[in-house]
Amino acid sequence: MADKEKKLRRELLRNKYNDKGFDALTEEEKLELLLSFSCTGDTAQLAKELLSEYGSINALADADTELLMKDKKVSEQASVLIKLIPCLSRTLYLERFKITTLNSSDSAKSFFTSHFIGAVGEQLIITAVNKRFRVVNTKVLAFGSPSQTYASYRDIADFAVKSSCTIFFMAHNHPQGVSRPSDSDILFTKNVSNTLLRLGSVLADHIIIGADSAFSFRESGLIPNFSSSTLTGYSCK
Amino acid sequence: MDSKNPHAGHRSRMRKRFLASGFDALYEHELLELLLFYARPVVNTNNIAHALTDEFGSLGKALSADKDKLCEIDGMGSSGALFMKLMYDFSTSYLKRSHSSETLNTVKQLSDCISEQFSSSQAKICNILCLSSQSELLRSITLPVDDITKGSISQKELAAMILKSGAFSVCIGLNHGNDLALPNDSDFIVTRIFAEILSAIGISFRDCIIYGNENCFSMRSNGAFSFR
Image 1 (cartoon, rainbow over the protein chains, first blue to last red):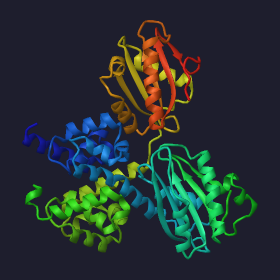
Image 2 (cartoon, rainbow over the protein chains, first blue to last red; image 1 turned 90 degrees about the vertical axis):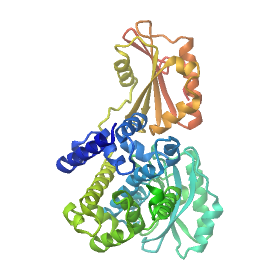
Image 3 (cartoon, chains in turn cyan, purple; image 1 turned 120 degrees about the vertical axis):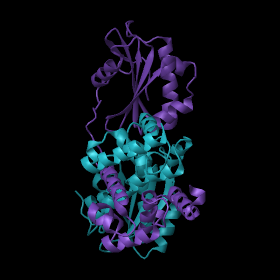
Image 4 (cartoon, rainbow over the protein chains, first blue to last red; image 1 turned 180 degrees about the vertical axis):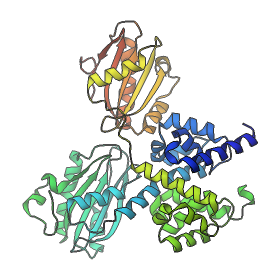
């Protein structure tokens, strides 16, 4: 496509967006418009190819950047621009639904849902809260492959000992999956609960965030330690 | 263009930091600066980022701001404001996952979908249905069966295609055209190949459905293959 044509096409697309809004554009046009800010090549062609490979812009935004950049047509600039989408989504979500206190399983689920927006792959995190369940700090313990996330109990003990808090939450995500706990999730939760008790702390809950749902271990009744004593200040369904 | 740009090194480093550790690695005003690289390719965007945060308070508020107010900020211009609006639209659209795509929970629904894909074709093709955890159809990939059995498409490429769709489970359809909808040797070879790949990448294998002469044969329902 000649340069002049390209320039004209870009202008037309921008004007269309300006006048008629986001929803008036097709998925291909949206992607083409986005890419026009990051590269000077044939963005229409690139948009078409990327959509046929990933299916949708959201799927593209969820893709692993290394996988994305393996395609020589996708420059670093373009990958960063695409990755900014889930990043900004998270920022907007956090602005709108700022949760600072995890005094119920619902608020804990919302808090961790927002934390994992746009996360690629599994992550395991631990959050320390004060006596009034106000979030103090969060640490990522491990990154995992889709089948297993590894975290040593030592890292958890380390975090707990260094923290001035005695109440902790654990959370991990199942990026494309359901929030049901696996057997190893259950065993892991039991062990962490015991570890923290021995250190004079308590595991308030372990939340699993799936693609469309969230799971609270304390609600489920699967952990004996949780069922045997209620945690004052934390309300479950 | 980058080699003549005095800010190229700084921008490149910032991009690499973002790619390496995700959003948590950058402060909000750094994210804003990074974002503005695309709106204003040549100038130093640090000042504009600070101007935006001063005026609106945060990255989130700057994104949600009115286009006219954005134009007024020194260095933004109408093109910069348009870009911010565009990114805001993309971000909100990312959160509103559309659940309007068809849900394929039962064998009947899967069979109907496969039938639709193959209805007018005699070609020996394989259709890969990539499904979400809620059994929504994310993507449908069509490939010639020969490419799979003869290895013109490597296992790695197949796996990459499926992974890119973000699938939780996969169902494949094999077309027999006008012939009987009963599995033959080639069908078993293809099914075995998929079973291997899917178990290796941790995606569950829902079913393999043979379509022939307007009928469907589900390998899972008929016990023709053991799907774990």
